[in-house]
Each structure stands twice: as C-alpha cells, then as structure tokens.
Length: 278
Image (cartoon, rainbow, N blue to C red; front, side, top):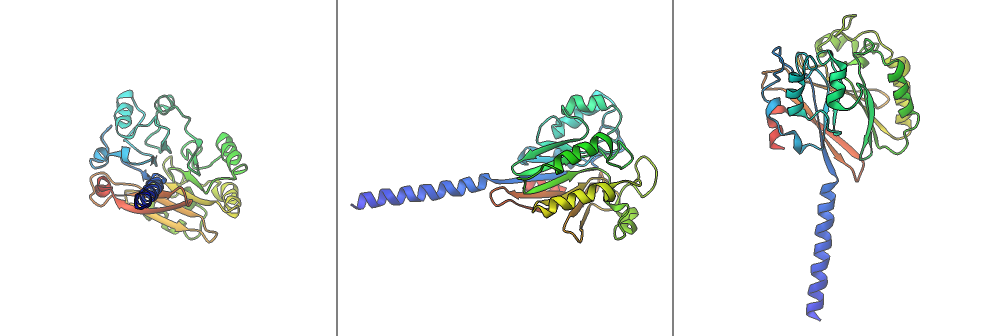
C-alpha cells in the first residue's frame, strides 16, 4: 500500500512539474529596435551588432537600420547577418534610410514593404510610412481595412511603423514632436508630414478597441533626441516608440513579455547593453 501511495505521489509531482514547464513555454519575448544606423554604411551601433537576437521569439525592427540599407547587396547581406531579415518572426517597418532598392529589400525579406501577420493571438500590421509621405493610402489602406474589418480572435493588434505619424494633428503630441522625433513636423522626405492617421486610421483602431482587443502603435523614428516614448490616448490606445543613437551607452530598446495563455502583453524599456543578460 505504501508503495502504491508513493507511486501516486510521484506521478502527481511529475504532472505538476510538466504543467509548470508548459506554462513557461507559453511566455514569449519580443524586442523592438530602431534607428541602429551610423553614418558609415553598412555599420550599425556596436552594441546592437553583438546582441544575440535568437533568444527573442520575435524581432520588431522600426527602420533606419543602416545609413542606406538597400543600396547594395553587401549592405543587405551585412544587415541580414545580424537581424535575419527573411525570418517570418522578424518584422521590419521601413524607414527613409532603408529606402533605395525596393526589389532588393523584397528579395531579402520575401515580403512586400507593408503586410499583415499573426502569431500566438497577436495580429500585426506592418506599415510603410515612407511610401506616401506619412499617409496610409491606396493598397496600404486597403490592407489595413481588410484586417481591421475582419479581426475577431486576437487579444492585441500591433501596428509597426517608422514615422511617428500620430503626432501630427494631435494637440497634446504636436508640441513635443520636434523634441522627440528624429524627423520634425514638416514637408520633407524624412519629416512627419501632414497625413490621414486621425481621419482614416484612428477611428478604425477605436472600433477594434471596442471589441475588447488592445491596440498598440509602435514607431521607430527616434533615437537622436530621446530613446523612448510612451503615450496613452484618452480612448486607451498606446503610442510607443524606441530608437538608438549609435555610440551612446544609454540607448534603449522595447522588450515585450507576452503571456500567451493569459493573453497579456507587458513591456519595458531596457538598455541595449543589458539585453544579453536576458
């Protein structure tokens, strides 16, 4: 009888142990990193170049990876060797410094410059804010609407984009734009241009929020002046941004922890020098 009880106790402890292990398997870590470039193509920030990105379940790149990322195969090969651009778990929202040869970019990523993806209950829309001077129009707008009009099961919707397009037209954020964003408010190619985010995009995001799906917009065109930015709209939608300034020791990236089982997503800004300790 004692042997039977001991055996049952052993089996119980084994089951509990397995459940704990399974719980760990449903915790994912995602990293958002942007503006890694230097002025010497193809070099990037030296700390960024040494991080082991394989430890993250997904890598979200906010653009401006190299000085002119797609200028030639050599630069793309170098950037690809660090970020694994063709990996389906590497999402890249293009910046103005990435532009050059769009065919070359698509060859390395196997994806168009804007697209949607889904992983473990999170829906992603990767936008190209350079294509139409900060506006989301044409085929991009069609893609965006086709996703948001049909999304039902996701716990989160994450928009990845380079320019801080939600600063333009926002009374709270416009006064901060020139001290936060790398690109100032204006009409230049790298500026935050007048755009259609609030008339056309934001109302759709509010519809998603009303369905009980959390919405997070993440931009990448910061780093020169600030390494982090966070803003919660009155309606409960998050605007985030992270970026680095090559050579600085206090650069930060956005680290996300996703509890897939409980459908929760948390984030914190981490020094890039501490990421290898994760």
